[in-house]
Length: 198
Ligand SMILES: Nc1nc2c(c(=O)[nH]1)N[C@H]1C(S)=C(S)[C@@H](COP(=O)(O)O)O[C@H]1N2
Ligand SMILES: [Mo]
Image (cartoon, rainbow, N blue to C red):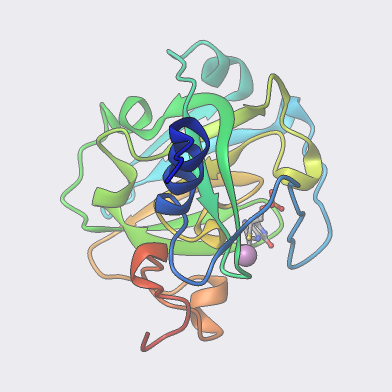
């Protein structure tokens, strides 16, 4: 038997990175539940509100001055497309949460336009999540969530809130927009947690 190790190796390496029920795409589809909000940078803020009501907030200029990260990650949409090796730039949630005092276990993420999504706070720390304002070497396009979106690639992509405005830290899990409409409260693509009860 003749084996072409490079080719077979690449194919199986890609297949290993595809969660169950997903297919690979090279495109970057746009999925938005409503119109694309236009947020002038002068008015943009990112605000973390703790369970006691304490707030930490950054203007666009303050956000730009923070240490930056350049994650390359695979993303998985619940509508079954996955895209490998997407390249982003932004600020790690570890940086934003560094001086925030909280004992909360959950976060409800808020966006300009009213979208929300929920996750355990531990899914946003330890290098697993970013507020991204650049994609593929450019400013993040408005339809993909610009000026800035949450990027939490180990969960289905509906958790990566576009046009993100802040985090609300909560002692109890509180369902967001799609989670209220029957999507899974956690959304692990590797366990195929698409809908409530999966
Ligand atoms: N604010 C907001 N964020 C959102 C959405 C949305 O409708 N509004 N859609 C979610 C869904 S279902 C997906 S799959 C991804 C799509 O991101 P994209 O349009 O950049 O591909 O954004 C997520 N974040
Ligand atoms: Mo989605």
